[in-house]
Length: 152
Image 1 (cartoon, rainbow, N blue to C red):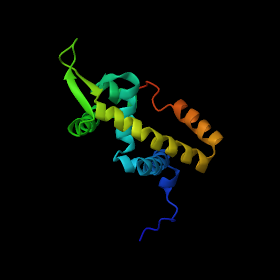
Image 2 (cartoon, rainbow, N blue to C red):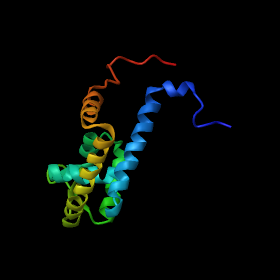
Image 3 (tube, rainbow, N blue to C red):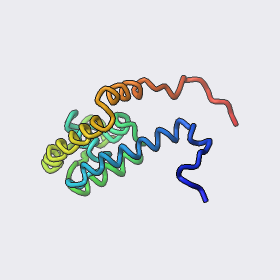
Image 4 (cartoon, rainbow, N blue to C red):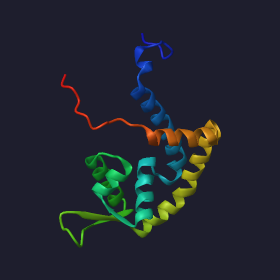
């Protein structure tokens, strides 16, 4: 039987380490946002819309680095729950523009202090200086150099 403490070669995998950290951080933020019924992914959509007033699914997907189809599903859920509206673009009918409803704006306002508390807890647990350095280092990570990948 596999032990959680058993050393594995995958423990040296950069992707595995990032995914594990990401899931742990996500759980922290989700726990803070739970009182208003949001997950961090939903909060970030509301926050992006509050910042930019409106966006298309593609714009949100790019801004939050989420697959377009996954973003479409998340926005659909927020629309179903009455937090966003989707309307045809006034300039290009092929696109739908997403905006916060009054309820979505109010939910964002209610959730923002909970998100701030998650930010503070993460900084307290890991040290504010370390968190700032981590964010800077994560922003600098390069995963593509534009070169073609060899075929396998």
